[in-house]
Image 1 (cartoon, rainbow, N blue to C red):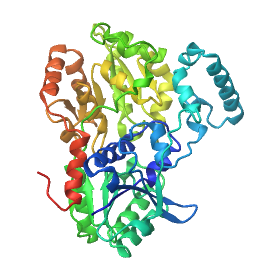
Image 2 (spheres, rainbow, N blue to C red):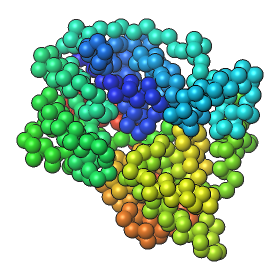
Image 3 (tube, one colour):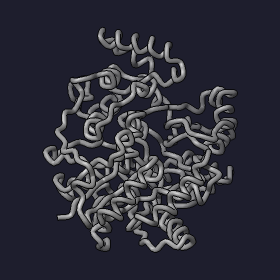
Image 4 (tube, helix red, strand yellow):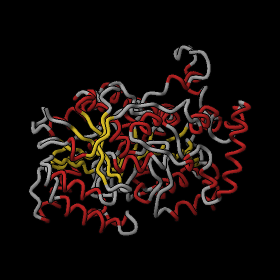
Length: 476
């Protein structure tokens, strides 16, 4: 019987540095979780390149069929990760100041032992989050895994699937080449975008060159490519045409689904019917600063704060609108990790006090916090210059919220007729799209009604379609 190996080399490296999943990592985790259900846990292996020992390792967790892969501790145990203490909640501000950071870790540990919930809430986190991050044996997940060298368990025509940044880990392509050439394993790679080649001015350092060179090499060992959108599929086919690659490119659109379900153990009080006190039911476990955001209406932007996300233009629109009289303007809330080539925007925010408080940032939001922000916003904005897919658009729709979305690249594939479109290069266009949703609540409600009546694509759909392709069938 065919075995399915999912490479998690890049996912392991990411989880060792971060406690929250980002877009690409979320795709990997959610798809693998559903694949284990579709294929059976006994047929699914995890593999990764162990650079220290020079081995390509394979491990299986057949005895734990019902693992919750959306849980950070489970992933760390499953993928044999020892997380760095750099990702402790609230410690980001002390990066580069190890002595001061260690002092505040000591303080937080003391307050944790004393049970001072208010101390953590004032710092934008919770007592529970700190205890989870610092816990040892109590919160560790114990898993019994079969560990082998890949070449000892892989057989001809088995499937090796890479769902994240396959081109980034050093030395991984040599493992893939051996799997293809020496073992006869079929290698499938999902490419999330072709940004380093199509719009290289949104990347940094030598990313463009490294991505190009890896992609050329990959044609020597990849059996098929997957694309997350029709737009990305066209970009990949154009590249293959130019470099002589003959591999098929199959489009498997990503999900328009909510974030992972909250951990039931996160409730600090007795359950309360959400219908009786919906605001309390949603917000009781939120940090004070997050819950306080809902005191006024706000519009939400989700994603890494980098130049491609076009934050400077969106903020310029808010700067225009805040100066107009007679309009009840919502705040603009931006959540995500800091990115690159965004200095002009960051300097402007510092100089203006975040436009006098009209813009508010939430860094390092957990899934629970992010879900809360989605549920309570007026709408979201994804005015990126270019996207491979656009997960925040789909997440917004999954929470019943419409969005202002760029009319470029893949984004119309995600938003369809449930969002307002704009030209990301035009301030006037972005402003007009936002005002349609700010000034006309009836129109906004009509858009939300369209979302409710639509059958949004799930992660089950993604995994099922991907496996159909890998099994050399055609999706129905």
